[in-house]
Amino acid sequence: MSNSYGTLFRITTFGESHGHSIGVVIDGCPAGLELDEAFIQSELNRRKPGQSKITTQRKEEDAFKILSGVFEGKSTGAPIAIVIENSDQRSKDYSHLENTFRPSHADYTYEAKYGFRDHRGGGRSSARETAARVAAGAIAKLFLKKYAVEINAFVSQVGELKAPHYTQLDLSKTENNMVRCPDPVMSEKMIALIDQVRLSRDTIGGVVTCVVKNAPVGLGEPVFDKLHAELGKAMLSINAVKGFEYGSGFEGVKLHGSQHNDEFYNEGGKIKTKTNHSGGIQGGISNGEDIYFNVAFKPVATIMQDQQSVDKEGNEVTVAGKGRHDPCVVPRAVPIVEAMAALVTADFILRSKVSKL
Image (cartoon, rainbow, N blue to C red):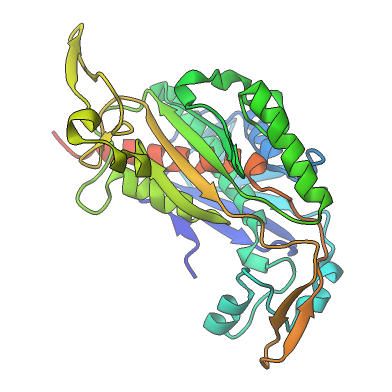
């Protein structure tokens, strides 16, 4: 099972949804970095369950403990181990799933691959694991502050409801509402839609857009570790993600080359582009413009309705919808997307330091 990510700034996560705890080991964080624990906790609070009526009602404080790698508030260069205890476990909610495969979950594939699985909330396949990523991503963000890199994600779409392009929005307003959409009018519509879907005992998908500002020129390692390829891998590793696009993405196919090309110009000795269809990445390397991308999340697979499936023996069964689940995952996915973007960016900054004399 693959549980590690990164090259120089590398993380390994551990733990299951209904086990004793989850956590992460961060290896490669440079020594001397001041670790603002209040900031790390604030990032975890953005992801934690039970935030509002449109998120799961599981109650987890997601309080973390740093076990190693930090002395007098600063990183020592040794591995940083962080643990987050699970406090609101209701494993009995999943006892009926011990021998049953839930539609569109990882139950069947885990069973087929490993011959054994933790059926309590999906075990290792649960999105609860992403809390560990957010903790690690918070440390990556603290590292990126040294380079003035800013990472801001927001909910840009729920179902058919779509916010304007990020350049038309004030991203400082993202946290002003429970759906984390910086457009005040669209956010109210999104909240109403998610609540309507929740009351109908169903779920709905959406899109999280992420913008990385002030990334240094030269991040990315062609040929196979291009910046956008690594961002895509990072985002697609998040639970429920079904799609990734950067820059003009799929909409770019509608343009001619004469419309799509980003022309260069010199502004006070700094090379810039007049447009940014490239999404801040050309040839797999950052060019200094905003890096922006979209991450598509499917409707949450657990619905509060009966569904047809089979058990381990192939017998037809009815799966009853139980437990505490998000009707739409994207509001809580915003800090997860930011965390993975921070981990990728931090890793490439460290890697770029050895790419030339």
